[in-house]
Length: 436
Ligand SMILES: [Zn+2]
Picture (cartoon, rainbow, N blue to C red):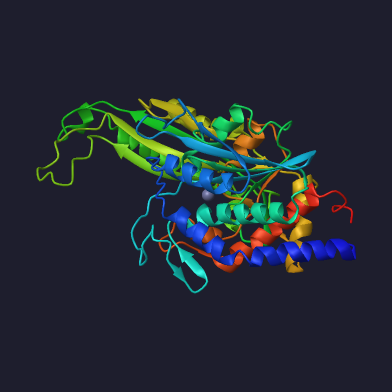
């Protein structure tokens, strides 16, 4: 860069350092709004808070309720906010998307999960790292950039969206369906999920969820030969998974840079199994009735690689079930798809990737690591529904802390990643900076 642009960047970074206290207070405020999902609490409250904050900094805001989306109700409305600040000339729009929901608290906390307690450099709370810290960092980055360069070209958008933790259908998917991520209005998307401040996340594996049910025939438990045990049929399914499916999946490896390493193979979790009578409440003191179960159900969570596809993934499970129907007496089954998400991988040469790559080099003096997520996040909707391929996840925080007790975010990490985000804005929205 030239001396002049060096000085401009220096001034931008100094401005971000000066916002440390503001960043801490903002992060604490966000954590103190308990946006638990499920059920989807306080979405309106957090949108109103962001509305006040961003309106005061010159953003045009719009609150969008995902009316009719899964989970949306008058009791638990799915509110989202999109804030936009236009520059003085036309140009690209850079969009920062953060989900506002957090998962249940769970056991094992030694801090108040909604207290936003600051201890040395760390702020504690549910959602601190996943991903209110990332949201706060992007807000500070955008505000500092606009204050420093009010005459920028293009636009900056910041969205706070609902329901990422439950699939994103009341959040990014809804906005994408309504055209908010149309490549004609948004050109670059950064999702500040906690992927560590020096890593660029290009995408995620695919996911396929299904319920499998085996059927039997009810009879008295003392004479099981008069009935047909659905649980034993399911045992045969699980046996086939062990001998055939799991080894086959473990042998498949992807070129995607998925972390952790174990997720570079195909994986499957068996989420639940239930057969026979419904479970009784914990305070039931009676004995179970003596019945042969006529139904057994499992839910499976199959995560797949860019090198596999939906038809293959569901087809190989169905083939196991069909084989059993031929080889095993009275074996009857139903398989029902619950949800499907295609894998998403942004090209390494995409502009948002090369821009953030350069910003990480400039700010940290090192090459970024490239990763892909073992799970999925809202990139799937921006890619598939929005048809926008220029999208990454980049943000502060340690991925492994997400959803854990005593979740925290480092203030210095947030400041550092805000610098990368603001540096990226400078490259994309200031004329002459990219080739400077
Ligand atoms: Zn998240």
